[in-house]
Image 1 (cartoon, rainbow, N blue to C red):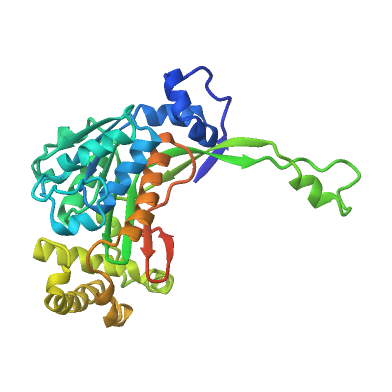
Image 2 (cartoon, one colour):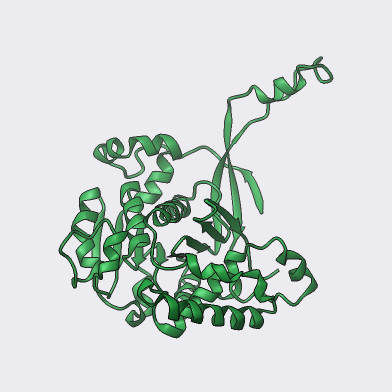
Length: 351
């Protein structure tokens, strides 16, 4: 990672109207006019309008992106009503994206919100090039890897995330990403106090800040999911790696095999299959099955609304940071454990 001090900020309105400046006044004060200008010029594709998708949509619309396209080819099911607050009562059988459109648009009339009912798998590569960021939920591993590759090739910010019961994750591939971070300036110690008790105070009393430019490079999702755990270096890192990474591998395999996520109504059958997939997946990765104790199956069914809120808040904020090029992004996984009530960032991929 390289860094250097950034020059003077841009002046003027930066393309933001007085009405927009008033609407976004609080966040402009938080991350600056230039960051808001970049955000206001960005278009985002959000795929999958279940509970997590609703949270991300809400956060991006309120933040003030230029446009948000919500894409989902599935119909509203009874389970969707538990965590998807954008879908009104009485919408069973309607398309999820279309059912979410009115409430989503009402959150912020300044954002252009659209619904797309086509299957993401039927979209051509040039469809994605109209967006500055793509965020996937509810997609298979194959689709995620494919679209991440398209985004990487076309310099589009890529995000994905999902909720499985009490567990949630996000992943980002921002390519070679540049951003600025606000740092407190350290004042030079006045002559004569270098060795005295006021030395530390003299360095920390400053309230002056500077903007520092940084650059970080991300790997693709395919690489992040294909870590070779057989090397000595990887085995040493295994002790520090969250078990949630391996849980994700198991749940994505279940989704690929069954074409769905674990369902409460088929708890016994799905629990047995999850344990079988755990043994198969962890063995193929070269790690022991004891990394995921059997009780993990009790906590990964359905979407939990509070977990959607936490992970959706994190995922929405990461998209905002990437588009506004303000503050360090999560590189590259974020895992949330609702049982323990904690989350952590893991950087996994080629060494």
